[in-house]
Length: 506
Image 1 (tube, one colour):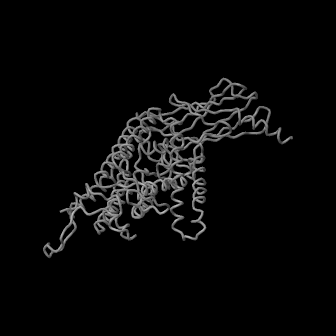
Image 2 (cartoon, one colour):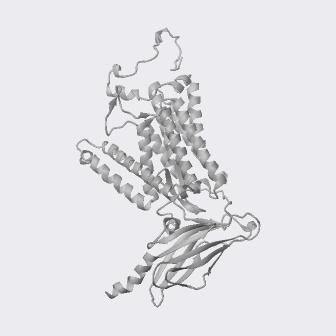
Image 3 (cartoon, helix red, strand yellow):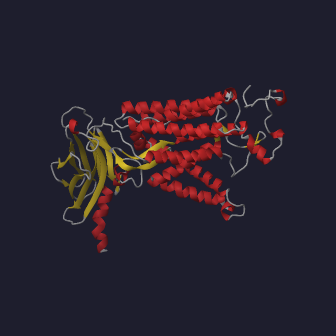
C-alpha cells in the first residue's frame, strides 16, 4: 500500500500533464498520456527503429548577421497538485550553436489548472562561418518535473533538429543508397524473369492467368489516385489524419502482399511438406506478425519487407503488353514524380527527400539507415513505384526474348537499369537538390530497348505487338497449338536467299 501511495503522484502526473512546443506560429504536441509523441522521440536520432526524422526548427533568414531561433515550450497542468519544473537543452554534437533556456512565466512553479512556459533559444554563428559540420545539430530537451514537497522526479526527454539556415543544402554521399539500389535491382531482375503465379491456377479466355493487363484504363486509375492523393495531402497541409489513413491503407495492402508472397514461397516446397499443406494458415500468421508490429512501431526493416512484398505483388499480378502502354505508364510516373518534387522544392523549407520521409513514411518506399546521420534525414530511400515499374518493363523484355528466341532485350534492360541508377546516384550527390529516380531510370530503359528493337528491325512489333502471355510457358507444359495465339504472318524460309537471317517485323 505504501508503494502504491509513493508512485501515485507520478501516475497522476503522467495522465494530467501535457507539453507543447510553439514555433513559427505553429504549435505541436510533444507529450501526452505518459508518452512522447512519435516525431519527438529520441530514438529517431539513433537510426535503429524508424526512418522518420524528428521535428526540425531553424533560421530561415539568409543574411550575414548572427541568426537565432526561439521556441516556446508550454507545459499545461490539468491536475490538482503543483510541480517544480526544470528545463535544459543539450547537444551531443560539437558545434558553434549556443543553447539558452529560461522561464518566461511569472511564477516558476507549475500550479494546478495552469501552465508554465520556457523560452528555448538557439544562437548561430555568422553565415560566413557556417560549414557542413556546424550549420545544424540535434537537440535533446530534458525536463525534470517534481511534485512540490515530494522527492520523486519524473523525467521527460524529447528530441528535435535545429538548423542555422533552412535553405542550406550540403552535397552528401552515403553508401546506404547504392547498397539499397543493388539489393532491389537484383531482386527485380530475378522477379521479372519468374513472374508465373504458382500458388493458384485460374484459367480465363483459353489461357492460365498470368497477370492483369496494364491498359490505358489502369494507367488512368493510377494517375488519378496519385494526383488526387497528393492534392488532398498538400491541400490539407500534410494533415496527420491523411497521413495515418495512407499508412493504414498501405499497411493493409502490404500485409496482403506478404500473405501472397508467403503462399508463393510455400508452393516451392515438396508437395508432402507440412508447410505447403498448411500454407494458408502459415501465410496468415506471417503476414499478421509483420503487418501489426509495423503499424504500431514502424521500424524500417518491417517497412522494407512490406515494400518488397508490394513490389513482388505488382510484378506478379500486372503485365505490360508492349512499348506503347509501357511508355504511357513510365512517362505518367515521371510527370507525377517531377511535379510533386517541384512543388515541394518551391513551397517547403525541407528538401524533397526529407519531406517524403517526414510526411510519407510508409511502405511506399524502401529504406535503409544512413551510415552517418545527415541534417533532417537519417535514412536513404527509393520509391516503391520507381522500382516496381522497371520490374514490369523488364518482365516485358524477358517475354519478348522468349517470343523472339533471343536474349538481347532482357540484357539491354538490366544493363540500362544499372547504368541509369548509377547516373541517378551521381546526380544525387553532385547537386544540392533532390531529384526523383524515375527521371533517370525510365527514359534510359525506354531508350535502350527501343534502340535494340530498331537494331533488330523489330520496332513495329515491339511498339504494337502482343507480349502479354509467355508462350514459352505453354510450350514447356505441352499445351496444344489450339490454345495458343495463331501467328499473324507465315513465311516460307526455303524461298529466302542463303544468308544469315534475323527475325524481323518484315
